[in-house]
Image (cartoon, rainbow, N blue to C red; front, side, top):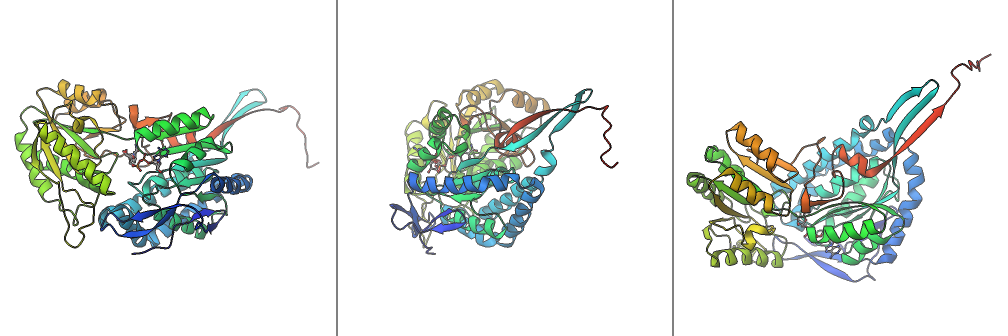
Length: 485
Ligand code: NAD
Protein backbone atom coordinates (compact mmCIF):
# COMPACT_ATOMS: atom_id res chain seq x y z
CA UNK A 1 0.00 0.00 0.00
CA UNK A 2 1.13 3.55 -0.67
CA UNK A 3 0.81 6.06 2.19
CA UNK A 4 0.88 9.88 2.23
CA UNK A 5 4.29 11.38 3.04
CA UNK A 6 4.94 11.12 6.78
CA UNK A 7 4.61 14.39 8.72
CA UNK A 8 5.74 15.67 12.08
CA UNK A 9 2.98 16.01 14.68
CA UNK A 10 3.34 19.17 16.73
CA UNK A 11 0.86 20.82 19.08
CA UNK A 12 -1.97 18.55 17.99
CA UNK A 13 -1.47 19.05 14.24
CA UNK A 14 0.35 17.34 11.41
CA UNK A 15 2.83 19.77 9.89
CA UNK A 16 3.55 19.76 6.15
CA UNK A 17 7.16 18.69 5.78
CA UNK A 18 7.60 18.89 1.97
CA UNK A 19 10.42 21.41 2.33
CA UNK A 20 12.54 19.01 4.39
CA UNK A 21 14.95 16.42 2.99
CA UNK A 22 13.47 12.94 3.17
CA UNK A 23 14.16 9.21 3.04
CA UNK A 24 12.08 6.53 1.34
CA UNK A 25 10.16 4.17 3.59
CA UNK A 26 10.48 0.69 2.09
CA UNK A 27 8.44 -2.35 3.04
CA UNK A 28 10.73 -5.30 3.84
CA UNK A 29 7.95 -7.63 2.69
CA UNK A 30 8.27 -6.83 -1.01
CA UNK A 31 10.76 -3.98 -1.33
CA UNK A 32 8.03 -1.53 -2.42
CA UNK A 33 8.07 2.11 -1.36
CA UNK A 34 5.42 2.79 1.27
CA UNK A 35 6.01 6.50 1.87
CA UNK A 36 8.63 9.16 2.58
CA UNK A 37 9.86 10.28 5.99
CA UNK A 38 11.14 13.82 6.62
CA UNK A 39 14.55 14.40 8.14
CA UNK A 40 13.73 17.16 10.59
CA UNK A 41 16.24 19.67 11.86
CA UNK A 42 16.67 21.54 15.12
CA UNK A 43 14.06 24.10 13.99
CA UNK A 44 11.28 21.46 13.98
CA UNK A 45 12.46 20.08 17.31
CA UNK A 46 12.41 23.58 18.80
CA UNK A 47 8.77 23.99 17.69
CA UNK A 48 7.81 20.66 19.24
CA UNK A 49 9.59 21.41 22.50
CA UNK A 50 7.97 24.85 22.68
CA UNK A 51 4.53 23.23 22.24
CA UNK A 52 5.28 20.62 24.91
CA UNK A 53 6.61 23.26 27.29
CA UNK A 54 3.45 25.32 26.83
CA UNK A 55 1.22 22.31 27.49
CA UNK A 56 3.13 21.20 30.61
CA UNK A 57 1.76 23.55 33.32
CA UNK A 58 -1.85 22.61 32.67
CA UNK A 59 -1.21 18.87 32.02
CA UNK A 60 1.03 18.44 35.06
CA UNK A 61 -1.55 20.15 37.29
CA UNK A 62 -4.34 17.88 36.04
CA UNK A 63 -4.92 15.26 38.76
CA UNK A 64 -3.43 11.89 37.83
CA UNK A 65 -6.81 10.17 38.14
CA UNK A 66 -8.05 12.49 35.41
CA UNK A 67 -4.89 12.08 33.31
CA UNK A 68 -5.23 8.30 33.21
CA UNK A 69 -8.78 8.63 31.87
CA UNK A 70 -7.11 9.47 28.53
CA UNK A 71 -5.26 6.16 28.71
CA UNK A 72 -8.42 4.17 29.48
CA UNK A 73 -9.86 5.63 26.24
CA UNK A 74 -6.55 5.09 24.42
CA UNK A 75 -6.63 1.41 25.46
CA UNK A 76 -10.17 1.01 24.09
CA UNK A 77 -9.14 2.69 20.84
CA UNK A 78 -6.10 0.40 20.53
CA UNK A 79 -8.49 -2.54 20.93
CA UNK A 80 -10.92 -1.06 18.40
CA UNK A 81 -8.20 -0.43 15.80
CA UNK A 82 -6.07 -3.48 16.63
CA UNK A 83 -6.25 -5.06 13.17
CA UNK A 84 -5.46 -1.85 11.27
CA UNK A 85 -2.63 -0.92 13.63
CA UNK A 86 -1.18 -4.42 13.30
CA UNK A 87 -1.35 -4.16 9.52
CA UNK A 88 0.67 -0.92 9.59
CA UNK A 89 3.31 -2.56 11.80
CA UNK A 90 3.42 -5.56 9.52
CA UNK A 91 3.84 -3.48 6.37
CA UNK A 92 6.52 -1.16 7.67
CA UNK A 93 8.48 -3.69 9.75
CA UNK A 94 7.99 -6.94 7.81
CA UNK A 95 6.88 -9.12 10.71
CA UNK A 96 4.11 -11.72 10.36
CA UNK A 97 0.46 -10.85 10.95
CA UNK A 98 0.39 -12.87 14.19
CA UNK A 99 3.51 -11.09 15.48
CA UNK A 100 2.10 -7.68 14.59
CA UNK A 101 -1.16 -8.46 16.39
CA UNK A 102 0.81 -9.66 19.44
CA UNK A 103 2.73 -6.36 19.36
CA UNK A 104 -0.47 -4.29 19.58
CA UNK A 105 -1.81 -6.60 22.31
CA UNK A 106 1.36 -5.89 24.27
CA UNK A 107 0.74 -2.14 23.78
CA UNK A 108 -2.67 -2.67 25.37
CA UNK A 109 -1.15 -4.47 28.35
CA UNK A 110 1.39 -1.67 28.81
CA UNK A 111 -1.43 0.87 28.71
CA UNK A 112 -3.36 -1.07 31.36
CA UNK A 113 -0.34 -0.69 33.62
CA UNK A 114 -0.29 3.09 33.01
CA UNK A 115 -3.98 3.19 33.99
CA UNK A 116 -3.01 1.68 37.36
CA UNK A 117 -0.44 4.38 38.14
CA UNK A 118 -2.68 6.37 40.55
CA UNK A 119 -2.55 3.33 42.84
CA UNK A 120 1.26 3.29 42.74
CA UNK A 121 2.18 6.95 43.22
CA UNK A 122 0.36 7.74 46.43
CA UNK A 123 3.51 9.00 48.16
CA UNK A 124 4.24 8.66 51.88
CA UNK A 125 3.29 10.61 54.97
CA UNK A 126 4.44 10.32 58.59
CA UNK A 127 4.12 12.46 61.70
CA UNK A 128 7.86 12.51 62.45
CA UNK A 129 7.50 14.39 65.76
CA UNK A 130 4.61 16.05 67.58
CA UNK A 131 2.98 18.46 65.14
CA UNK A 132 5.52 17.85 62.35
CA UNK A 133 4.69 15.82 59.30
CA UNK A 134 6.97 14.74 56.42
CA UNK A 135 5.44 13.77 53.11
CA UNK A 136 6.65 12.84 49.67
CA UNK A 137 4.99 13.12 46.30
CA UNK A 138 6.06 12.26 42.76
CA UNK A 139 6.34 15.36 40.59
CA UNK A 140 6.62 15.16 36.78
CA UNK A 141 9.87 16.26 35.14
CA UNK A 142 8.58 18.50 32.33
CA UNK A 143 9.34 17.91 28.63
CA UNK A 144 10.82 14.47 28.04
CA UNK A 145 11.91 12.57 24.93
CA UNK A 146 11.66 8.98 23.76
CA UNK A 147 13.89 7.72 20.95
CA UNK A 148 12.92 4.29 19.62
CA UNK A 149 14.26 1.57 17.27
CA UNK A 150 12.81 -0.16 14.20
CA UNK A 151 12.15 -3.65 15.54
CA UNK A 152 8.95 -2.92 17.49
CA UNK A 153 7.40 0.16 15.85
CA UNK A 154 4.56 0.21 18.40
CA UNK A 155 5.52 -1.73 21.51
CA UNK A 156 8.76 0.04 22.41
CA UNK A 157 7.02 3.41 22.05
CA UNK A 158 4.39 2.09 24.46
CA UNK A 159 7.07 1.19 26.98
CA UNK A 160 7.55 4.91 27.53
CA UNK A 161 4.62 6.95 26.23
CA UNK A 162 1.71 5.97 28.52
CA UNK A 163 3.74 5.98 31.74
CA UNK A 164 5.64 9.19 31.05
CA UNK A 165 2.51 11.10 30.02
CA UNK A 166 0.21 9.65 32.69
CA UNK A 167 2.78 10.74 35.26
CA UNK A 168 2.34 14.33 34.05
CA UNK A 169 5.14 14.83 31.52
CA UNK A 170 4.86 16.13 27.96
CA UNK A 171 6.65 14.05 25.36
CA UNK A 172 8.62 14.32 22.13
CA UNK A 173 8.76 10.98 20.30
CA UNK A 174 11.48 10.29 17.74
CA UNK A 175 10.47 7.13 15.81
CA UNK A 176 12.91 5.07 13.79
CA UNK A 177 13.18 6.50 10.28
CA UNK A 178 12.86 2.91 9.00
CA UNK A 179 9.35 2.47 10.47
CA UNK A 180 7.79 5.92 10.91
CA UNK A 181 4.19 5.18 9.89
CA UNK A 182 2.63 3.86 13.12
CA UNK A 183 3.59 6.93 15.15
CA UNK A 184 1.27 9.25 13.18
CA UNK A 185 -1.69 6.95 13.68
CA UNK A 186 -0.97 6.78 17.42
CA UNK A 187 -0.87 10.59 17.56
CA UNK A 188 -4.36 10.65 16.01
CA UNK A 189 -5.62 8.04 18.45
CA UNK A 190 -4.24 9.90 21.47
CA UNK A 191 -5.95 13.06 20.25
CA UNK A 192 -9.22 11.17 19.86
CA UNK A 193 -8.73 9.81 23.40
CA UNK A 194 -8.72 13.40 24.65
CA UNK A 195 -5.02 14.14 25.13
CA UNK A 196 -4.60 17.95 25.05
CA UNK A 197 -2.58 19.44 22.18
CA UNK A 198 1.14 19.72 22.81
CA UNK A 199 1.31 16.92 25.39
CA UNK A 200 2.46 14.41 22.75
CA UNK A 201 4.54 15.41 19.72
CA UNK A 202 6.33 13.43 17.03
CA UNK A 203 9.48 14.64 15.31
CA UNK A 204 10.90 12.43 12.56
CA UNK A 205 14.50 12.20 11.45
CA UNK A 206 17.70 10.41 12.28
CA UNK A 207 21.10 11.37 13.70
CA UNK A 208 20.68 15.17 13.67
CA UNK A 209 17.40 15.12 15.52
CA UNK A 210 18.68 12.66 18.14
CA UNK A 211 21.68 14.89 18.78
CA UNK A 212 19.39 17.91 19.02
CA UNK A 213 17.22 16.09 21.60
CA UNK A 214 20.30 15.32 23.71
CA UNK A 215 21.36 18.97 23.54
CA UNK A 216 18.03 20.75 24.00
CA UNK A 217 18.03 22.75 27.26
CA UNK A 218 14.26 22.36 27.76
CA UNK A 219 14.25 18.56 27.57
CA UNK A 220 14.63 17.11 31.06
CA UNK A 221 14.94 13.39 30.37
CA UNK A 222 15.77 11.15 27.42
CA UNK A 223 14.87 7.51 27.07
CA UNK A 224 16.55 5.62 24.26
CA UNK A 225 16.11 2.09 22.93
CA UNK A 226 18.34 0.82 20.11
CA UNK A 227 21.81 -0.56 19.44
CA UNK A 228 24.56 -0.43 22.06
CA UNK A 229 26.71 1.78 19.81
CA UNK A 230 24.05 4.48 19.66
CA UNK A 231 22.89 3.92 23.27
CA UNK A 232 26.40 4.86 24.43
CA UNK A 233 26.45 7.99 22.24
CA UNK A 234 23.01 9.09 23.47
CA UNK A 235 23.70 8.31 27.14
CA UNK A 236 26.97 10.21 27.07
CA UNK A 237 25.59 13.22 25.22
CA UNK A 238 22.34 13.51 27.20
CA UNK A 239 23.99 13.12 30.60
CA UNK A 240 26.81 15.50 29.68
CA UNK A 241 24.01 18.02 29.15
CA UNK A 242 22.80 17.19 32.71
CA UNK A 243 19.73 15.26 31.60
CA UNK A 244 18.33 12.16 33.15
CA UNK A 245 18.89 9.30 30.67
CA UNK A 246 18.07 5.64 30.39
CA UNK A 247 19.54 4.06 27.23
CA UNK A 248 18.78 0.45 26.37
CA UNK A 249 21.19 -1.20 23.96
CA UNK A 250 21.64 -4.39 21.99
CA UNK A 251 21.85 -7.96 23.20
CA UNK A 252 23.37 -11.39 22.76
CA UNK A 253 21.18 -13.78 24.68
CA UNK A 254 22.44 -17.24 25.60
CA UNK A 255 20.28 -20.30 26.09
CA UNK A 256 22.02 -22.99 28.13
CA UNK A 257 20.62 -26.44 27.37
CA UNK A 258 21.27 -29.29 29.80
CA UNK A 259 21.13 -32.99 28.86
CA UNK A 260 18.04 -33.48 31.08
CA UNK A 261 16.00 -30.79 29.28
CA UNK A 262 12.66 -31.97 27.85
CA UNK A 263 13.59 -32.38 24.15
CA UNK A 264 10.36 -31.35 22.38
CA UNK A 265 9.59 -28.40 24.67
CA UNK A 266 13.20 -27.19 24.50
CA UNK A 267 13.32 -27.49 20.71
CA UNK A 268 10.06 -25.56 20.30
CA UNK A 269 11.25 -22.80 22.63
CA UNK A 270 14.69 -22.49 21.06
CA UNK A 271 13.40 -22.34 17.50
CA UNK A 272 10.62 -19.88 18.41
CA UNK A 273 13.03 -17.69 20.33
CA UNK A 274 15.63 -17.49 17.58
CA UNK A 275 13.15 -16.94 14.73
CA UNK A 276 10.31 -14.85 16.25
CA UNK A 277 10.17 -11.41 14.60
CA UNK A 278 12.83 -12.80 12.22
CA UNK A 279 15.31 -12.80 15.11
CA UNK A 280 15.05 -9.02 15.37
CA UNK A 281 14.30 -8.95 19.07
CA UNK A 282 16.57 -7.78 21.83
CA UNK A 283 15.29 -10.85 23.71
CA UNK A 284 15.91 -13.33 20.87
CA UNK A 285 18.02 -16.41 21.48
CA UNK A 286 21.11 -15.88 19.43
CA UNK A 287 23.55 -18.29 21.05
CA UNK A 288 22.90 -21.72 22.51
CA UNK A 289 25.36 -23.44 24.80
CA UNK A 290 24.83 -27.18 24.63
CA UNK A 291 26.09 -28.80 27.83
CA UNK A 292 27.13 -32.46 27.63
CA UNK A 293 25.36 -34.96 25.40
CA UNK A 294 22.43 -33.11 23.80
CA UNK A 295 22.61 -34.25 20.16
CA UNK A 296 19.06 -35.59 20.39
CA UNK A 297 17.82 -32.07 21.35
CA UNK A 298 19.81 -30.38 18.58
CA UNK A 299 18.28 -32.78 16.08
CA UNK A 300 14.82 -31.79 17.31
CA UNK A 301 15.69 -28.08 17.10
CA UNK A 302 16.56 -28.56 13.43
CA UNK A 303 13.28 -30.43 12.87
CA UNK A 304 11.33 -27.59 14.54
CA UNK A 305 13.24 -24.89 12.66
CA UNK A 306 12.45 -26.60 9.34
CA UNK A 307 8.76 -25.87 10.02
CA UNK A 308 9.52 -22.13 9.93
CA UNK A 309 8.89 -20.87 6.43
CA UNK A 310 9.82 -17.38 5.17
CA UNK A 311 6.75 -15.44 4.06
CA UNK A 312 4.46 -17.78 6.02
CA UNK A 313 5.38 -18.02 9.69
CA UNK A 314 8.65 -16.09 9.35
CA UNK A 315 8.73 -12.38 8.50
CA UNK A 316 11.33 -10.39 6.61
CA UNK A 317 14.39 -8.69 8.09
CA UNK A 318 14.29 -4.91 7.94
CA UNK A 319 16.29 -4.23 4.75
CA UNK A 320 18.81 -5.42 2.17
CA UNK A 321 21.82 -4.33 4.26
CA UNK A 322 20.52 -6.33 7.20
CA UNK A 323 19.95 -9.47 5.09
CA UNK A 324 23.46 -9.20 3.63
CA UNK A 325 25.01 -8.66 7.08
CA UNK A 326 23.25 -11.74 8.55
CA UNK A 327 24.25 -13.92 5.62
CA UNK A 328 27.85 -12.69 5.92
CA UNK A 329 27.97 -13.87 9.55
CA UNK A 330 26.80 -17.36 8.49
CA UNK A 331 29.30 -17.63 5.64
CA UNK A 332 32.18 -16.45 7.79
CA UNK A 333 31.34 -18.97 10.56
CA UNK A 334 31.12 -21.76 7.98
CA UNK A 335 34.49 -20.80 6.52
CA UNK A 336 35.95 -20.92 10.03
CA UNK A 337 34.76 -24.50 10.58
CA UNK A 338 31.25 -24.24 12.03
CA UNK A 339 28.69 -26.70 10.66
CA UNK A 340 25.53 -25.25 9.09
CA UNK A 341 22.76 -27.73 9.95
CA UNK A 342 19.99 -25.60 8.46
CA UNK A 343 20.82 -22.85 6.00
CA UNK A 344 18.60 -19.79 5.58
CA UNK A 345 20.84 -17.95 3.14
CA UNK A 346 19.34 -16.93 -0.19
CA UNK A 347 15.74 -17.34 0.99
CA UNK A 348 13.15 -16.14 -1.53
CA UNK A 349 9.40 -15.82 -1.26
CA UNK A 350 7.44 -16.39 -4.46
CA UNK A 351 5.81 -13.18 -5.69
CA UNK A 352 7.89 -11.13 -3.20
CA UNK A 353 11.31 -11.48 -4.80
CA UNK A 354 12.38 -8.04 -3.55
CA UNK A 355 11.43 -8.86 0.03
CA UNK A 356 14.37 -9.20 2.42
CA UNK A 357 13.99 -12.69 3.87
CA UNK A 358 16.50 -14.89 5.65
CA UNK A 359 15.42 -18.45 6.40
CA UNK A 360 15.85 -20.10 9.81
CA UNK A 361 19.48 -21.05 10.34
CA UNK A 362 21.00 -23.50 12.82
CA UNK A 363 24.80 -23.60 13.07
CA UNK A 364 26.57 -26.15 15.23
CA UNK A 365 30.15 -26.31 16.54
CA UNK A 366 30.50 -22.55 16.66
CA UNK A 367 33.57 -21.44 18.63
CA UNK A 368 33.16 -18.73 21.24
CA UNK A 369 35.77 -16.52 19.56
CA UNK A 370 33.92 -16.36 16.20
CA UNK A 371 32.15 -13.10 15.30
CA UNK A 372 28.80 -14.91 15.04
CA UNK A 373 29.20 -16.05 18.67
CA UNK A 374 30.18 -12.64 20.02
CA UNK A 375 28.20 -10.07 18.07
CA UNK A 376 24.51 -9.27 17.78
CA UNK A 377 23.37 -10.93 14.53
CA UNK A 378 19.72 -9.74 14.66
CA UNK A 379 18.43 -12.42 12.31
CA UNK A 380 16.76 -15.88 12.59
CA UNK A 381 20.02 -17.62 13.39
CA UNK A 382 21.09 -19.76 16.35
CA UNK A 383 24.77 -20.48 16.93
CA UNK A 384 25.42 -23.62 18.98
CA UNK A 385 28.53 -23.89 21.13
CA UNK A 386 29.42 -27.13 22.91
CA UNK A 387 30.70 -27.44 26.48
CA UNK A 388 31.21 -30.30 28.90
CA UNK A 389 30.13 -28.51 32.09
CA UNK A 390 27.67 -25.93 33.38
CA UNK A 391 30.56 -23.74 34.55
CA UNK A 392 32.05 -23.67 31.05
CA UNK A 393 28.63 -22.65 29.70
CA UNK A 394 28.39 -19.90 32.30
CA UNK A 395 31.90 -18.72 31.46
CA UNK A 396 30.83 -18.23 27.83
CA UNK A 397 27.64 -16.41 28.88
CA UNK A 398 29.47 -14.25 31.42
CA UNK A 399 32.15 -13.24 28.91
CA UNK A 400 29.70 -11.65 26.49
CA UNK A 401 29.56 -7.88 26.95
CA UNK A 402 25.77 -7.66 26.77
CA UNK A 403 23.36 -8.64 29.54
CA UNK A 404 19.74 -8.53 28.46
CA UNK A 405 18.62 -12.13 28.89
CA UNK A 406 19.83 -15.68 29.48
CA UNK A 407 17.87 -18.92 29.80
CA UNK A 408 18.44 -22.42 31.05
CA UNK A 409 16.59 -25.53 29.92
CA UNK A 410 16.66 -28.26 32.55
CA UNK A 411 14.42 -30.29 34.85
CA UNK A 412 16.84 -29.91 37.72
CA UNK A 413 15.85 -27.11 40.11
CA UNK A 414 19.35 -26.94 41.57
CA UNK A 415 20.94 -26.38 38.17
CA UNK A 416 18.32 -23.73 37.34
CA UNK A 417 19.04 -21.89 40.60
CA UNK A 418 22.80 -22.17 40.03
CA UNK A 419 22.40 -20.45 36.66
CA UNK A 420 19.97 -17.80 37.91
CA UNK A 421 22.58 -16.81 40.50
CA UNK A 422 25.53 -16.73 38.11
CA UNK A 423 24.26 -15.60 34.69
CA UNK A 424 25.26 -12.02 33.96
CA UNK A 425 21.93 -10.79 32.60
CA UNK A 426 19.01 -8.74 33.85
CA UNK A 427 16.27 -11.13 32.70
CA UNK A 428 16.58 -14.88 33.21
CA UNK A 429 14.41 -17.67 31.85
CA UNK A 430 13.98 -21.20 33.17
CA UNK A 431 12.53 -23.35 30.39
CA UNK A 432 11.45 -20.09 28.73
CA UNK A 433 13.02 -18.95 25.46
CA UNK A 434 12.05 -15.27 25.63
CA UNK A 435 12.01 -14.31 29.33
CA UNK A 436 10.22 -10.97 29.05
CA UNK A 437 8.79 -9.94 32.43
CA UNK A 438 5.11 -8.99 32.26
CA UNK A 439 3.66 -5.89 33.89
CA UNK A 440 3.95 -4.81 36.70
CA UNK A 441 7.46 -6.33 36.62
CA UNK A 442 9.98 -4.15 34.87
CA UNK A 443 11.93 -4.77 31.69
CA UNK A 444 15.65 -4.09 31.59
CA UNK A 445 19.03 -5.70 31.04
CA UNK A 446 22.51 -5.34 32.50
CA UNK A 447 26.01 -4.54 31.27
CA UNK A 448 26.16 -3.15 27.69
CA UNK A 449 22.42 -3.77 27.25
CA UNK A 450 21.50 -0.81 29.45
CA UNK A 451 23.05 2.48 30.49
CA UNK A 452 21.50 4.36 33.38
CA UNK A 453 19.73 3.49 36.60
CA UNK A 454 16.36 1.73 36.91
CA UNK A 455 14.24 0.04 34.28
CA UNK A 456 12.08 1.33 31.49
CA UNK A 457 8.72 -0.30 32.25
CA UNK A 458 6.72 -1.36 35.29
CA UNK A 459 7.01 0.19 38.73
CA UNK A 460 10.66 1.08 38.17
CA UNK A 461 9.68 3.52 35.43
CA UNK A 462 7.98 5.76 38.01
CA UNK A 463 11.38 6.71 39.44
CA UNK A 464 12.66 7.59 35.97
CA UNK A 465 9.73 9.77 34.88
CA UNK A 466 9.24 11.67 38.15
CA UNK A 467 11.20 13.48 40.82
CA UNK A 468 10.38 13.34 44.51
CA UNK A 469 9.08 16.40 46.32
CA UNK A 470 9.57 16.22 50.07
CA UNK A 471 7.50 18.51 52.33
CA UNK A 472 8.04 19.06 56.03
CA UNK A 473 4.93 20.59 57.55
CA UNK A 474 4.61 21.97 61.05
CA UNK A 475 1.40 22.92 62.78
CA UNK A 476 0.38 23.67 66.34
CA UNK A 477 -1.47 20.62 67.59
CA UNK A 478 -2.66 22.53 70.64
CA UNK A 479 -4.16 25.51 68.75
CA UNK A 480 -7.67 24.11 68.66
CA UNK A 481 -8.91 26.80 66.29
CA UNK A 482 -12.63 26.45 65.76
CA UNK A 483 -13.30 28.05 62.36
CA UNK A 484 -16.98 27.26 62.64
CA UNK A 485 -17.59 29.40 65.71
P1 NAD B 1 19.69 2.01 16.15
O1 NAD B 1 20.57 2.19 17.33
O2 NAD B 1 20.31 1.98 14.81
O3 NAD B 1 18.58 3.17 16.10
C1 NAD B 1 17.81 3.51 17.23
C2 NAD B 1 17.41 4.98 17.13
O4 NAD B 1 18.60 5.78 17.12
C3 NAD B 1 16.65 5.30 15.86
O5 NAD B 1 15.59 6.16 16.18
C4 NAD B 1 17.69 5.97 14.96
O6 NAD B 1 17.14 6.96 14.14
C5 NAD B 1 18.66 6.59 15.95
N1 NAD B 1 20.06 6.58 15.50
C6 NAD B 1 20.66 5.68 14.67
N2 NAD B 1 21.97 5.96 14.54
C7 NAD B 1 22.22 7.05 15.29
C8 NAD B 1 23.39 7.83 15.57
N3 NAD B 1 24.57 7.53 15.03
N4 NAD B 1 23.27 8.89 16.39
C9 NAD B 1 22.08 9.20 16.95
N5 NAD B 1 20.94 8.52 16.71
C10 NAD B 1 21.00 7.45 15.89
O7 NAD B 1 18.84 0.68 16.42
P2 NAD B 1 17.86 -0.07 15.42
O8 NAD B 1 18.67 -0.70 14.35
O9 NAD B 1 16.73 0.83 15.04
O10 NAD B 1 17.24 -1.18 16.39
C11 NAD B 1 17.85 -2.41 16.62
C12 NAD B 1 18.69 -2.41 17.88
O11 NAD B 1 17.89 -2.03 19.00
C13 NAD B 1 19.27 -3.77 18.23
O12 NAD B 1 20.58 -3.60 18.67
C14 NAD B 1 18.38 -4.25 19.37
O13 NAD B 1 18.97 -5.18 20.24
C15 NAD B 1 18.12 -2.96 20.06
N6 NAD B 1 16.94 -3.04 20.91
C16 NAD B 1 17.15 -3.12 22.26
C17 NAD B 1 16.08 -3.25 23.11
C18 NAD B 1 16.31 -3.37 24.59
O14 NAD B 1 15.34 -3.41 25.33
N7 NAD B 1 17.53 -3.45 25.08
C19 NAD B 1 14.76 -3.28 22.61
C20 NAD B 1 14.59 -3.17 21.24
C21 NAD B 1 15.69 -3.05 20.40
